[in-house]
Image (cartoon, rainbow, N blue to C red; front, side, top):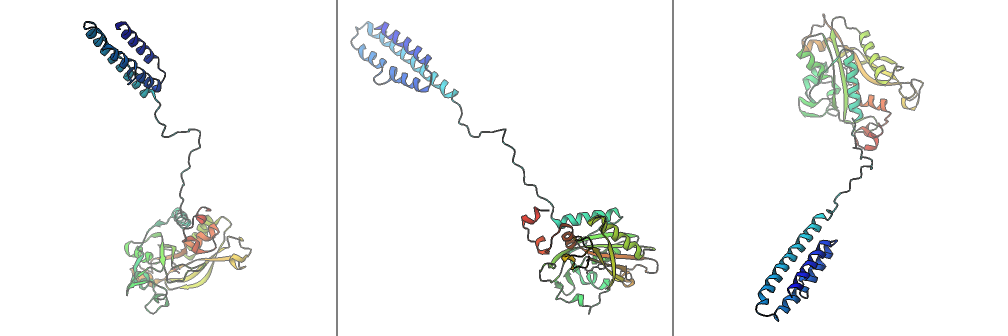
Length: 337
Ligand code: DAH
């Protein structure tokens, strides 16, 4: 019996050692330690042993059984540890990377930045004014008296009697001249507001860039030269500019400035109604009444001013035919530019 126990123990340890996987370990546990296992059988048969054999055999059987049990545990733990971890994420380094979706600047922002840069190279600095203005800055100081049709609340958003959303960027001229002394050369880009019903060329919010130069001996020739250079840089070197006499309360003389049509380059096409020219901005020499309102001596100083629609410039530049497209935020438009 003793010999039998020893042999069974040895065989068990060997077989466990040679087990190839966790299932085999489990099978061996059943085989040796199970309810109908070899050790159960040995224990059962011990009852028939003599009184002096029994304790010895019992002790040996217990020890062997414990050794087997330990070996089973150790082996099972070994397999558990070596089992590959469940794979959560397979990283394939050969898959091309996902491109981040780059945003880009809106055509109005691009046009504004470019125009500001062009005028900066011509010696103009950038200034900004509030979008909510006083009637004094938006009208009175610009020689637009009370009864002038531009003050009509049908084309202006009034907040209070004398506070409104600015209807042009020209009030920034007034603010600049009140704050500083000539010589002055500034451009002022920004939003302006009018009670216009949206159509292909009108929108109640749009953008302008205002220009102002004040110094001794500034002439209309300086204005023409600055605008000509700026337009050639913005629209292309073959762009021509022309001035037509016009009227603005804050300039004298005043002019409408046209550029040669950017679509047909001046030949005449449907975009320019066959004229070969498109109207782009208003300009002129600063009216002495404006100088008076801001306390600049009009005997000593002269100046030119201009105001240009940025949206319209962006449309000509990027070939957009309806201003509303600029405000729809449709990515199909923005992605093309
Ligand atoms: N403020 C004018 C407008 O919104 C545009 C303009 C015309 C600006 C002539 C000027 C200027 O500075 O000299 O229609």
